[in-house]
Image 1 (cartoon, rainbow, N blue to C red):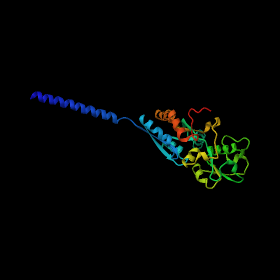
Image 2 (cartoon, rainbow, N blue to C red):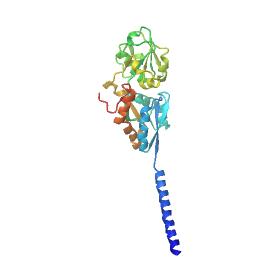
Image 3 (cartoon, rainbow, N blue to C red):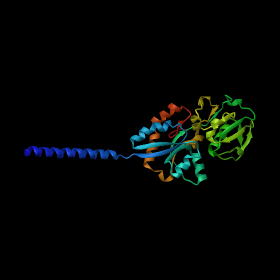
Image 4 (cartoon, helix red, strand yellow):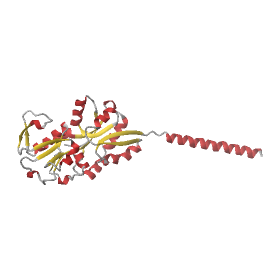
Amino acid sequence: MKKVLKTLALVGVFSLGLVLAACGSNKSADTTKTTTVKIGVVGSDNRVWKHIQPKLKKEGINLKIVEFSDYSQPNSALADGDVDLNAFQHQFFLDDWNKKHNQNLTTIGKTIIAPMAIFSKKITKLSQLKKGDSVSIPNDATNEARALELLKTNGFITFKKGTGNLPTPNDIKTNKLNLDIKVLDAAQLPSSLQDVTASVINSGVALNAKLDFNKALDIEKVTKASIPWINIIVAKKKDVNNKTYKKIVKAFQTNDTKKYIKKIYGKTELPAWDYKF
C-alpha cells in the first residue's frame, strides 16, 4: 500500500511539473512582442501596403494604415504623433512643407514614381483644346509647379526668364490659347472635370477617383528630371534609424513588391528604389 501511495505521489509531482512547464511555455508564447506602427496615406487605394502587411506581421509588426482625405493632413499628423510614418508625398512636397511649418520630417526610404496625367470628360486629345478653355491644376506649391511643367512640355505655356524650380501661374510668360488655369485642392480635381475642359491630376488622386489612365490625354514622362518627384516614406528626424521602421522600408523594397506594383498599376506607378534613369 505504501508503495502504491509513493508511486501516486511521484506521478502527481511529475504531472504537476508538466503542467508548470506547459504554463511556462504558454507564458513565453504570450509575451511575443508585436509592435503596432501607424502609417498615414492619402486615399483608399492602399493595395501595395496591404500586400506587405502579412510579411511584416511575421516580423512582429502590425502595420496599421491610416487614411487621410487630402495632402494637408498626413505631415501634421506625423509631427503631432498621431501616426508614426507617412507615405504619400515626394521630396519637393516634403521640403516645401518642412520649410513652411518649421519642421524637420525626414525621408527614410523611396517607394514609387507616380506620373501626373491630363484627363478630360469633354475632349479626347490635347489638340482639341481651344482658346479660352479652362484647365484645373493642384494648389499645393510642388504639384502646381509639376502640372504647369506638363502644360509647358505640351507647348501651351512658357515661363518668364529666371523662373525657379517651382513655377506658379504668375510665372507664365506666354499662354498660347489663353487657357483659364484654375488652381484647386488636389482632391477636388476629379470632380472639377465636370466644369473644366481638362485637369492635370496626381496619380494617386486619379486612381482613387477610378479615372482610366488609358484614356488620359497625356502622361508625364519619367526621366532623370523626375527624381524630385519620387514618392517617399517619411518619419520624424529622431526616428530615422528606428530598426522597426527600417524593416518596413525593407519589406516594401523587394522584387515581390515590384512585381505586384507592375501587376496592379502597369505604367501609372513605377517602383523607384532602384530605378535606373
